[in-house]
Image (cartoon, rainbow, N blue to C red):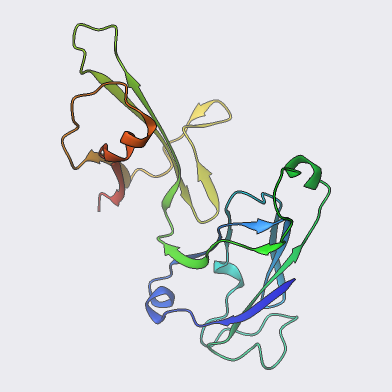
Length: 203
Protein backbone atom coordinates (compact mmCIF):
# COMPACT_ATOMS: atom_id res chain seq x y z
CA UNK A 1 0.00 0.00 0.00
CA UNK A 2 0.87 3.68 -0.11
CA UNK A 3 0.78 5.69 3.10
CA UNK A 4 0.94 9.48 2.84
CA UNK A 5 0.39 12.29 5.32
CA UNK A 6 1.54 15.80 6.07
CA UNK A 7 3.94 16.53 8.93
CA UNK A 8 3.90 19.56 11.19
CA UNK A 9 7.36 19.73 12.75
CA UNK A 10 7.42 21.30 16.27
CA UNK A 11 8.83 24.81 16.24
CA UNK A 12 11.41 24.06 18.95
CA UNK A 13 12.87 21.25 16.83
CA UNK A 14 13.47 23.72 14.01
CA UNK A 15 14.85 26.49 16.21
CA UNK A 16 17.31 24.16 17.99
CA UNK A 17 18.39 22.52 14.70
CA UNK A 18 17.56 19.04 15.89
CA UNK A 19 18.28 15.84 13.97
CA UNK A 20 14.82 14.52 13.02
CA UNK A 21 14.38 10.77 12.58
CA UNK A 22 11.52 8.65 11.27
CA UNK A 23 11.08 5.36 13.16
CA UNK A 24 9.16 2.53 11.47
CA UNK A 25 8.66 -0.29 13.96
CA UNK A 26 7.80 -2.95 11.38
CA UNK A 27 6.75 -3.14 7.73
CA UNK A 28 6.10 -6.17 5.54
CA UNK A 29 7.93 -6.73 3.41
CA UNK A 30 9.72 -3.86 1.62
CA UNK A 31 9.37 -0.10 1.96
CA UNK A 32 10.50 3.05 0.19
CA UNK A 33 10.36 6.31 2.15
CA UNK A 34 9.83 9.66 0.43
CA UNK A 35 9.81 13.11 2.04
CA UNK A 36 8.52 15.98 -0.07
CA UNK A 37 8.73 13.70 -3.13
CA UNK A 38 12.42 12.97 -2.60
CA UNK A 39 13.61 9.42 -1.93
CA UNK A 40 15.03 9.13 1.60
CA UNK A 41 15.78 5.40 1.64
CA UNK A 42 14.40 1.88 1.60
CA UNK A 43 14.26 -1.11 3.93
CA UNK A 44 13.63 -4.87 3.82
CA UNK A 45 13.89 -5.82 7.51
CA UNK A 46 10.28 -6.92 7.82
CA UNK A 47 10.54 -7.96 11.47
CA UNK A 48 12.97 -5.28 12.61
CA UNK A 49 12.60 -1.50 12.99
CA UNK A 50 14.00 0.83 10.35
CA UNK A 51 15.03 4.44 10.89
CA UNK A 52 15.54 7.27 8.40
CA UNK A 53 17.15 10.68 8.93
CA UNK A 54 14.69 13.22 7.51
CA UNK A 55 16.58 16.34 8.56
CA UNK A 56 17.89 17.33 5.12
CA UNK A 57 14.58 16.57 3.40
CA UNK A 58 12.24 18.67 5.54
CA UNK A 59 11.07 22.13 4.55
CA UNK A 60 11.22 24.88 7.16
CA UNK A 61 9.93 28.44 7.10
CA UNK A 62 11.51 30.47 4.29
CA UNK A 63 13.14 27.37 2.77
CA UNK A 64 12.82 27.16 -1.04
CA UNK A 65 10.73 24.16 -2.17
CA UNK A 66 12.55 21.09 -3.47
CA UNK A 67 12.61 20.58 -7.22
CA UNK A 68 9.84 17.95 -7.26
CA UNK A 69 7.51 19.50 -4.65
CA UNK A 70 4.26 20.98 -5.95
CA UNK A 71 2.64 24.18 -4.71
CA UNK A 72 0.52 22.41 -2.10
CA UNK A 73 3.49 20.52 -0.67
CA UNK A 74 5.58 23.71 -0.51
CA UNK A 75 3.45 25.28 2.21
CA UNK A 76 5.57 26.66 5.07
CA UNK A 77 4.44 24.05 7.61
CA UNK A 78 3.42 21.29 5.23
CA UNK A 79 5.96 18.51 4.79
CA UNK A 80 4.61 15.43 3.03
CA UNK A 81 5.80 11.98 4.11
CA UNK A 82 5.04 9.01 1.85
CA UNK A 83 5.79 5.34 2.54
CA UNK A 84 5.38 2.82 -0.28
CA UNK A 85 5.06 -0.75 1.02
CA UNK A 86 5.25 -3.92 -1.11
CA UNK A 87 3.76 -7.22 0.01
CA UNK A 88 6.63 -9.37 -1.35
CA UNK A 89 10.29 -8.89 -2.19
CA UNK A 90 13.13 -11.20 -3.24
CA UNK A 91 13.85 -12.11 0.41
CA UNK A 92 10.26 -13.05 1.32
CA UNK A 93 11.04 -16.79 1.18
CA UNK A 94 13.48 -16.34 4.09
CA UNK A 95 10.59 -15.22 6.29
CA UNK A 96 8.17 -17.85 5.00
CA UNK A 97 7.07 -18.96 8.46
CA UNK A 98 3.65 -20.10 9.59
CA UNK A 99 1.95 -16.71 9.78
CA UNK A 100 -0.64 -14.58 8.05
CA UNK A 101 0.66 -12.70 5.02
CA UNK A 102 -0.84 -9.32 5.84
CA UNK A 103 1.44 -6.70 4.35
CA UNK A 104 1.71 -3.12 5.53
CA UNK A 105 2.87 -1.07 8.49
CA UNK A 106 2.05 -3.25 11.48
CA UNK A 107 3.98 -1.51 14.28
CA UNK A 108 4.28 2.06 15.53
CA UNK A 109 5.51 4.78 13.17
CA UNK A 110 6.69 8.03 14.74
CA UNK A 111 9.18 10.90 14.62
CA UNK A 112 11.74 11.72 17.28
CA UNK A 113 14.63 14.14 17.49
CA UNK A 114 18.19 14.14 18.83
CA UNK A 115 21.02 16.60 19.02
CA UNK A 116 23.44 16.69 16.09
CA UNK A 117 25.83 14.55 18.18
CA UNK A 118 24.05 11.47 19.48
CA UNK A 119 24.32 7.86 20.62
CA UNK A 120 24.01 5.77 17.47
CA UNK A 121 24.35 2.27 18.90
CA UNK A 122 24.80 0.61 22.30
CA UNK A 123 25.84 -2.98 23.00
CA UNK A 124 25.62 -4.30 26.56
CA UNK A 125 27.01 -7.64 27.78
CA UNK A 126 26.41 -8.84 31.36
CA UNK A 127 28.55 -11.73 32.65
CA UNK A 128 27.99 -13.52 35.96
CA UNK A 129 31.20 -14.78 37.62
CA UNK A 130 30.02 -18.07 39.12
CA UNK A 131 33.53 -19.47 39.50
CA UNK A 132 34.81 -16.59 41.63
CA UNK A 133 34.94 -16.58 45.41
CA UNK A 134 32.42 -13.76 45.33
CA UNK A 135 29.34 -15.57 44.07
CA UNK A 136 27.47 -12.31 43.69
CA UNK A 137 30.08 -10.78 41.39
CA UNK A 138 29.72 -9.96 37.74
CA UNK A 139 30.73 -7.51 35.04
CA UNK A 140 28.72 -5.28 32.76
CA UNK A 141 30.50 -4.31 29.56
CA UNK A 142 29.01 -1.57 27.39
CA UNK A 143 30.20 -0.44 23.98
CA UNK A 144 28.87 2.74 22.40
CA UNK A 145 29.07 4.39 19.01
CA UNK A 146 28.78 8.17 19.05
CA UNK A 147 27.81 9.79 15.75
CA UNK A 148 27.41 13.24 14.27
CA UNK A 149 24.98 14.25 11.55
CA UNK A 150 27.24 13.17 8.68
CA UNK A 151 29.84 10.86 10.23
CA UNK A 152 29.91 7.72 12.33
CA UNK A 153 32.47 7.87 15.11
CA UNK A 154 33.28 4.34 16.21
CA UNK A 155 36.33 3.35 18.26
CA UNK A 156 38.54 2.98 15.18
CA UNK A 157 38.87 4.48 11.70
CA UNK A 158 41.21 2.64 9.31
CA UNK A 159 42.70 0.84 12.34
CA UNK A 160 43.51 4.20 13.96
CA UNK A 161 41.83 5.28 17.23
CA UNK A 162 39.38 8.14 16.71
CA UNK A 163 38.86 11.04 19.10
CA UNK A 164 36.76 13.28 16.89
CA UNK A 165 34.35 14.41 19.62
CA UNK A 166 36.58 15.60 22.48
CA UNK A 167 33.79 17.79 23.92
CA UNK A 168 31.38 14.89 24.41
CA UNK A 169 31.45 12.07 26.94
CA UNK A 170 29.24 9.03 27.54
CA UNK A 171 28.14 8.36 31.12
CA UNK A 172 26.72 4.97 32.22
CA UNK A 173 24.89 4.54 35.51
CA UNK A 174 22.80 2.01 37.38
CA UNK A 175 20.16 3.98 39.26
CA UNK A 176 19.12 1.02 41.45
CA UNK A 177 21.19 -1.30 43.61
CA UNK A 178 21.36 -4.71 41.87
CA UNK A 179 19.95 -7.63 43.85
CA UNK A 180 22.08 -10.63 44.73
CA UNK A 181 23.21 -11.97 41.38
CA UNK A 182 22.40 -15.54 40.43
CA UNK A 183 21.14 -17.40 37.38
CA UNK A 184 17.42 -16.74 37.14
CA UNK A 185 14.55 -17.77 34.89
CA UNK A 186 13.88 -15.49 31.98
CA UNK A 187 10.66 -14.16 33.51
CA UNK A 188 12.60 -12.81 36.51
CA UNK A 189 15.08 -10.80 34.44
CA UNK A 190 12.61 -7.95 34.10
CA UNK A 191 13.15 -7.14 37.79
CA UNK A 192 16.84 -6.34 37.31
CA UNK A 193 17.88 -2.68 37.12
CA UNK A 194 18.48 -1.27 33.67
CA UNK A 195 21.62 0.71 32.85
CA UNK A 196 21.02 4.25 31.64
CA UNK A 197 23.38 5.92 29.20
CA UNK A 198 23.71 9.69 28.91
CA UNK A 199 25.73 11.61 26.32
CA UNK A 200 26.65 15.12 27.37
CA UNK A 201 28.92 17.95 26.37
CA UNK A 202 31.81 19.05 28.56
CA UNK A 203 31.14 22.66 27.64
